[in-house]
Length: 175
Image (tube, rainbow, N blue to C red; front, top):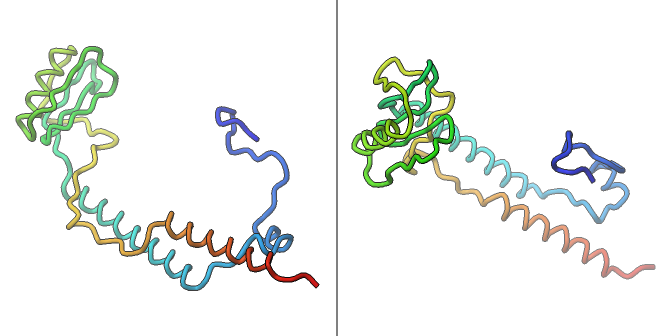
């Protein structure tokens, strides 16, 4: 078995067998999914993809607006958003950001706290766009619902069906 911290943690050591070969060698070990199970998995995948696409559209239409950035030597040290969300590019020793408040009031408070903890210049325009913006709080009403069961529940049912089919084979009298 390969170690997680090895150079290639996904390297396989030992005999490798495909599911098709396993099904041929041990027909009781692998069973086919039923048409109903396949449809349910397909529905889950479709609904999840629609939900993710809606989330991405909402985030693009409602981006978190940058309130200010703290810059030093051309590098952005911190970004403060209108919502009060604050991101820093590095761990800043002794920085304790307020948790009380929301919106611009929180943004202003956090910017003051940042300026006490680090040296830099505050800019209020011509921002350096961060590679990843913080996730927006997307209301559930903006997302399509997922009516399909969760994957864990489906897999549990499929596994139980496999176990039941093996029980039937094991209980069949041998000639």
